[in-house]
Length: 138
Image (tube, rainbow, N blue to C red):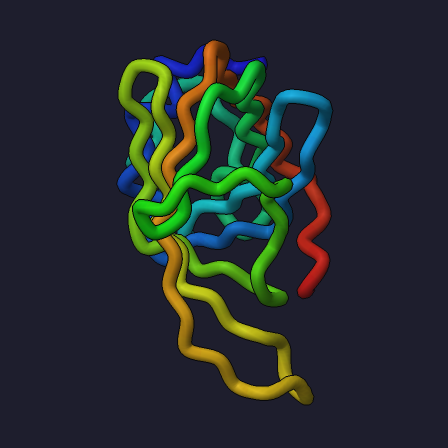
């Protein structure tokens, strides 16, 4: 696991990136994320980039205490609302993660125009960098 302090330096690179998957594990959630394409010269740390020059990995939120979606308390298990989530904003502060997601479907399915703001409070947040993580839509 990469220290969270390193990934926090690159959160702005996730604008126009992708939410690839959401998995619920016990009292936690795992978000598979990919940043937008980066210029290699912007990388100042030891994070390895994918072959598409993106940061890819999994954000682990353990011992989740609360989840809100669009400012409403969410008590069900989080899952992908549609096939693909484009990241509009991504922020991590203390024990809180906020993801703003623009949702869409893959071709052949009906067009959607939906947006969600997901805020999760968790006791532990960490990042696992996985530059060769498979993107299910590629």
